[in-house]
Image (cartoon, rainbow, N blue to C red; front, top):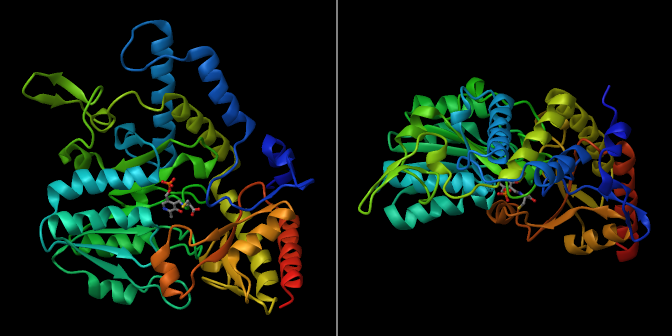
Length: 408
Ligand code: C6P
């Protein structure tokens, strides 16, 4: 049994009133709220264990180092990586993708090489690749999104050529909520001799992921979208690939030996972690993983699916509302973008805020997808472990209020 009411009690912020009303937090795709266990891990670290890591041999330094590396181990276990050496701590999913682009891309790509992305990418998995178009002359190709909001795998098959060196796609779209068939996409990429990267910013928080089963070469994610603090994320990469890649940033901790005229790099994962890392947030990220594992990712996925089904049924019954992406919960999850006829999404979001309901409005850092949908912006409600059918009901009531206010 998924006990949402018990879960809610772990989240102090959910007790907040917004304009005197209960907070209904439906902006989880932007960032999730934090349970007291994660907040406590952060406070405990600074209160009892704070020291720099991999440097001192005093007690605090050893404790902090152990806690930091334990967190890395938890992430490795969470995604079934072969070894914690395959987990590189970074600030967020964006930085993880940039690391691959800067380090792997600059070393292994050349003029006319092709990288395949999809039309539904977040800017984080598009803009860094555009740098390499300008710098190296590589070519970007895009898997189209069908009217139903799915990736068109037939066209994808035709895009793959001998020149394709990388396929990098979003696992769950932060606009359409579509769960993309990454195992299949990866298999096709590998058959063509290309590497395969997954943007798991939205999938890792809400479904079980096994990188060895999916057989992805890289995977990028952020801690803050899965109960962890902001400012901490990670890149997973197959050990062999990471070994062959040059460092991304230079400085302390990423070196083995330094001379005035050259340096030798540290081993994995430290080769990619220059300078003092975000130690406390990594430790708290570990606490977030403990929390999620305790609930079970399959249970989280099922909980969101039920909420999505419930919300879709209600939203689709409203003639003034258009929902984007798949119209059933079968191929999607609890990230639902919609618009209301003749009302700008920012106005909807503002009216909902007056009702204590937090949604996101705008293009959600996926401008090309909105250009394809011929929309300047959409409203987006996104669910997580503490949301209930009652929250969906309040959203629907808020939408009705917006419709009434604008008399459409
Ligand atoms: N999407 C949203 O409201 P960062 O900002 O690096 O933690 O995550 C970037 C990112 C990458 N890929 C996907 C699919 C994402 O959804 C995001 C973040 C947030 O949709 C903030 S724009």
